[in-house]
Image (cartoon, rainbow, N blue to C red; front, side, top):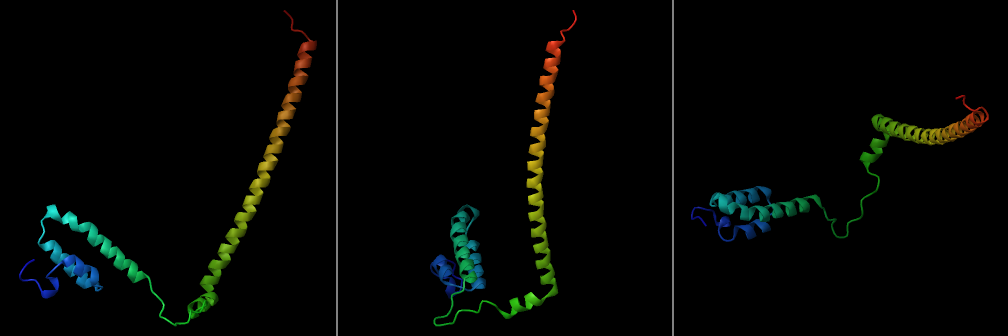
Length: 145
């Protein structure tokens, strides 16, 4: 390590980095780690540092409840205020109307498919009947030679 570095940076910098929770201190440590390395060796530290940063981000996002603390109420003041907000009510009404429209459209499409299948089978039967009638007429009336 360099002689001019503060006492906190002496020793194994990665283990020091793992135990520090201050993001500014971590960035400073990372800067000092990279400062003495050339580009050939820098790839060795990229993965461990990225892993440590991911762990710190995960710890920052999770919050553990204090021991003996009562569970939070399910309906907070914000949600009660949101229920009375006219924009929220409009959005909910719009989503309900959209869901209703989609259900009606789905039903109508299913009915249309059934009607189309019935019409197709009726047309097929009519074609078969007309083919039979034409074949009979042609068999009864031979073609002149």
